[in-house]
Structure formats: structure tokens, C-alpha cells
Length: 168
Image (cartoon, rainbow, N blue to C red; front, side, top):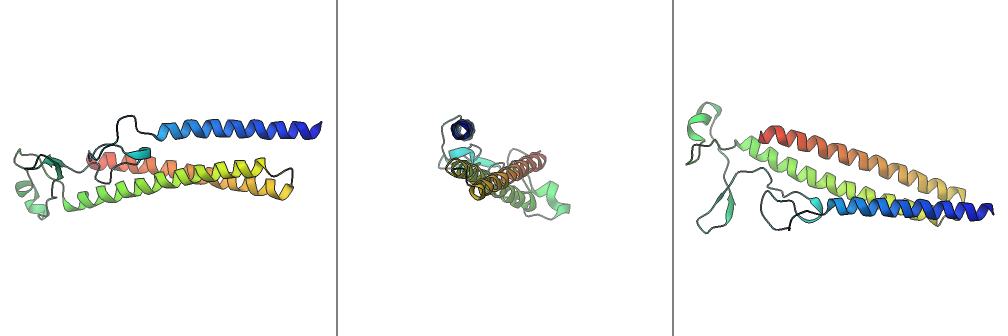
């Protein structure tokens, strides 16, 4: 009878894990249609690499990224305005925005990979058949996956905060 209770507990834990991971994966899907605009979220919640960069409509009607201003600091205010009088980004801000966007994409990918490892750990735990070494390996894998997920979530939050300060 004790073996039946252990199996039921494993099945129950697996069902809860699959259900919660299913809900998490739905949260990663974009709410709006995915297309190639610079400020839109695309497949699986990855941001566009050019998010936050200033854009304008080109002569052909397509959205183009405006070039950053390469003037020296003393000349920045006079030379770095577009036709409407809006200040352009400096080259440093332009490069940092791209670096932060690519970093965010990598951390979101790391979070997805850690969710995959958590599912693998749950499956390993489920099929361990009571063997202590397999259960220990599954628990260690799950612990490492959750640590990786926490790091990825915190890093993405930090990047979004820094990006909000830079975009201003």
C-alpha cells in the first residue's frame, strides 16, 4: 500500500508541474499579432533587438532606425536635433540600447532553458522508481533549474529597469 501512495504522490506532483509550466508558457506568448515592428514583442516574448531606438518613416513608407548623433559633447545640443527639433541619441546611448536588448533576449532564452530543465527533472523524478540516486539527481537538477530561472528573471528585471532609465 505504501508503494501506491508514493506513486500517487509522484503523479500528483507531475500533474501540478505540467499544469504550472503550461500556464507559464502561455504567459510568454505575445498578446498581439507578431510582426517586425521595432517596438513590438515577437515570438515567445522576445523583444526586438532595436526596441527603444528612435525610428522614422522612410521615403519608401517603411520604418527605419534613425542614425545616432556622433557629435562631441560640446556640440551635442546644437547639431543633434532632427527636423522636428527632437534630440537624437548619442552613439553611446544607441550602442547601450542594442546591447541591453540583446542581453534581455539571452536572459529570456536562459529562463526558457531552465524551465526545460525543470520539466526534465520532474520527468526524471517520476520515472526514478524509488531509486535514491535518481531521486537525488532529479532534486539537484530541479534546484539548479530554479536557481537559473531566478537569476534569469532578476537579470531581465534589472535590464528592463536600466533600459527604462536610458530611454527616459
